[in-house]
Image 1 (tube, rainbow, N blue to C red):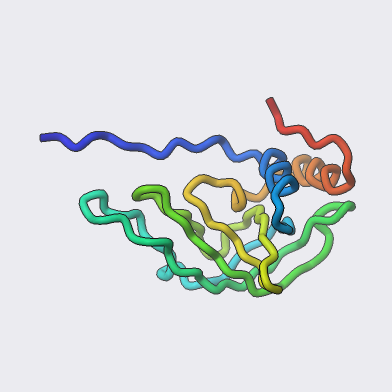
Image 2 (cartoon, rainbow, N blue to C red):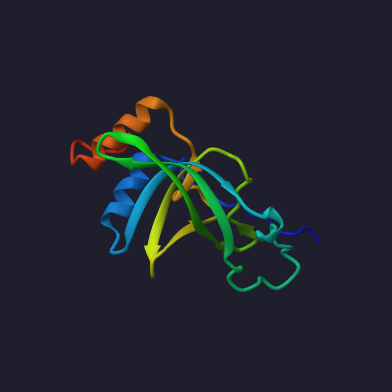
Length: 149
């Protein structure tokens, strides 16, 4: 008998929508563009549907190098430790490759920066182009910050 087809349905990543979501969140977030160095083998693999789904994956220590978003743009150089916290939705787990340039919304928690690495891009997504970086800076300044329709 054939297994039912399943798929994860994600919205197309939108940095402005993600900014608005984290801005409305009760937690405190910071936005960065850059890359991570970490042991990729510590991230959870896609899970086998024939096996029981495992609990929340373990956090993965990482080193981040890039720039932090401020009112004038991504112009503050940053090198900092961050914690990648992968999560899974069924068999799909958040993933990231070391060295990929990404946009990151990191949550501040107990003096640490936590990156929620979800199965759908949101808090981690491909690095935006210059025009999108300027739109994100405008959001930081409190200017028009509406996602594309």
